[in-house]
Image (cartoon, rainbow, N blue to C red; front, side, top):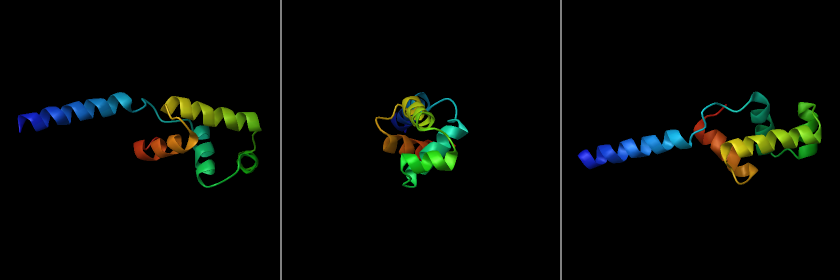
Length: 84
């Protein structure tokens, strides 16, 4: 039982180290959600009433913050870490 406890502590520690310390901004979440729903960038820009560069900046910032290789991975991490 002692080994199992040590493994549990290790995994919990690792989880907290990898999990971002704060949620994403509401703008970053909205941008990722629209992309996840299948919106093209032009449609997402219109829905959010922002420029293309602003949308790309939101998505890029979220990806970097989440250490995601691509937008799909960022969306998956938002869902799995409950960062909304």
